[in-house]
Length: 344
Image 1 (cartoon, helix red, strand yellow):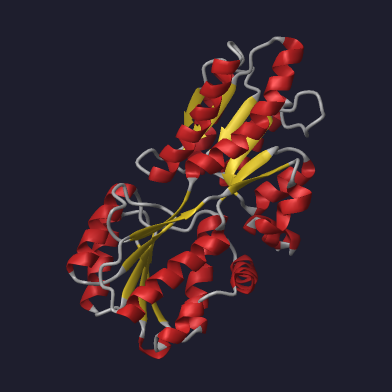
Image 2: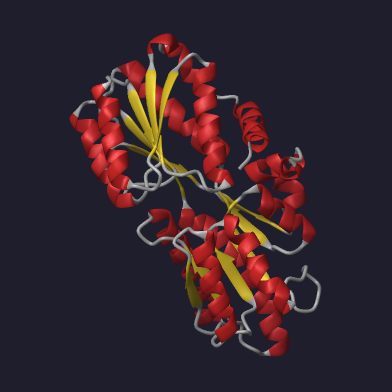
């Protein structure tokens, strides 16, 4: 992502956040936060990372940044380095749920408060965990296209062939999104027997190239797919690259439209809902999650709480073709899109 886009994310999201009321309870100039993260591949991760680091620095807090480049062992060593430097607190975006548990244990053994942003540990009993309700947000988005599929099924009697692009299943977020998808499919099949064929699962490992190859193969083997959920909005361009040559990239209300839903709430998803190509996306409330992460960690530092243990939930919501005119400003991606982010 180019520097202009990164700057736009920072400016827009920091203005939108208007957070850190707890800053007044600590001496900002005496606070150092270690922020360990993995490669920032998607708009959500870039936006979250930049909003947090810029907001903290604007308040006079020193932020030490460490990019582990998708290597959990490297991230563990980086966190150990932060602890050795005597940081006051740690924020991490871990590679996966297992490595997050190890890192939390390491921090708490050294009495350093730690918060996990958005990608939760598999054991949430220790540390501050800020996470979206992935199951609920997914169910809300998939429910919207399932309702459309039901109308189609009632008219034609022909079963719907659903497909899910699955994230890396060592990631708790990916597991929750897969569960939410199957909850809706199974619920509709119970109520309306025969409505959905057996869902097709396409592995992505959160990698666009992997997703492209596997989706191409799946669509070649199953050309009648007419219902797709992607576990992350960043794969919509990949989906388009596969569907468009087949004549299947059509807006709603047009013959051949494939029902599409995703999850994250990025600028591309907002644009595609506006244009009619995407029907719904489950939204992670980045504004809320960044606020919860920073305020709770800084409160722990102010209170001398070295081992805070708390799970803070972002309930999420679905932005759909039906409610976008009322709720677009609640989605972080629409804030970016409406400010011309995709044109930069």
